[in-house]
Length: 321
Length: 116
Image 1 (cartoon, rainbow over the protein chains, first blue to last red):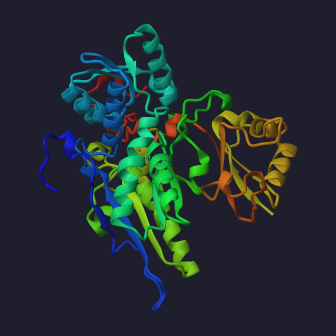
Image 2: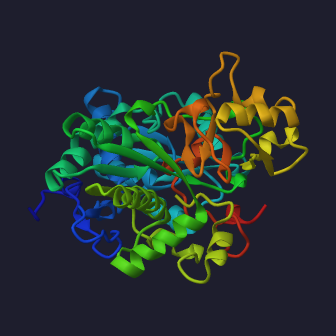
């Protein structure tokens, strides 16, 4: 289907494309090991976050939590903010985003273009500070509605009801699903759906490992685990550093023509690890992974060109995923 | 046998400021005991009084989360690389701000993004 009543109706149903050149080769006669990329950059605002944003708003409307003209408050500097800004604009809400002040010009411009207002939190505090600031602002404006993507079941449900079924329909032979671990919504929702339907499927998380400047923690007890996170849904969890994420992001565009953001490179890194293990074990594998967004918003980092050392340096201290 | 362990800033008070220390042990428990013998108090920051891995601590063996490799019973080999990290929302893709322009190399037109 290629005709929709509105932009929101065009959400989801993203293509799943094979990666014939990046998939590892197997010895003659051995079972095939294939990589498949789900192109979530083909959503209305260009990222997988459109799914969660629409589900969270719709759920809040249905439960009466959101009423026409309400103000939505969300701690996000990234794709969720942009997705929410679009949904809020089309549904008639005001959106206020709380974000660290060390965010790119592209993000600020995109958010403002969609009509969002921005409150900055000190960069030194990292994203924990952004969450804390948002909670404080929420206390000062009790009438503003927080959707709180880290603890909102509608975030995971979006993937349980859409991403998961789409993957199963397009790739019934799926053996592994690999996605980024942030709010954990994608992995929790898609993972629960696929575990229920596909015997032996492996659900694999790839989380970005940043330079320490980003974390801004003073104490180990200040850690933060999203309320949505349920470790029992996952089979493995990889931490991917900046260098590996950049290397894989470049391979995606150079080898397969897919221009993606750095989080997708981190996800590919984990997907390749499990694909190579399958080759070694002589096992068949259909590894589906998420392209979370396109590379457009990250061009100003300069990390798509130059040496890997240059790129690593350019992204030092940044939230690149 | 030598295992390289990367220590996060907030725990370096136990390692005399060292970012990377060496330890030994054929399981994670053995390694942490060995580290604690050299860096007194470190164990108490990683393990709860009940004997489990602290909720806000993530430990990775060769970039893979030990909670999925047997946790404290995870088997270790010579040459393994261990990374200890705090569990934080900063690792969240929800804060997907890849182009966060903290460095002076790529100044943005947003004044607050200037290096500090």
